[in-house]
Image (cartoon, rainbow, N blue to C red; front, side, top):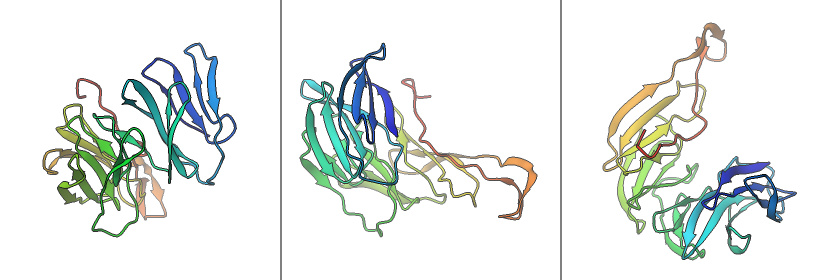
Length: 235
């Protein structure tokens, strides 16, 4: 399984095979530049993304797989490995974020947040251009943390959601409704400054002429299975 085939800041192609070829890089022409082994260590595979960020004068890639999270330079040099696999996000200062913590580009813990809610599910984190850190917990608790890990604001949402994405100027969060099947899916926008609702779109039922015996209704609820993305102009 390949995680996040991505084009790096140097124009080369990067991906992670959870076994076999492992972490690897291709030229734009498709020639193998290098490969670093990965030992398969988890039966359930997250279809995660590679992210890139600076460490001084070097660029690095980050990914979570096989029960660990790794950082490598773009020449294949290993930088750090953390226990536990998470989808990383990179802040404007180069810090590397999990849902509840932030690390330096060298893997040193910068801060750790302790949530007051029971630990169940956590979304992938998102970090705005102003350094504010966002994540959802248990599908309905949306947090905004300041750059040092303290709470900026928190809201309990009406709809179950996935991970937030923030626009380029850190003004709007967009969240897709979690795919629970028994509720219609939604896409909603929230004010990134205070957590207040801006708008919400309910996705129409798929195949509304067909009877759904599981729910006793016509049609099948749609869900959102990926996070949205903003273009540079904020669309």
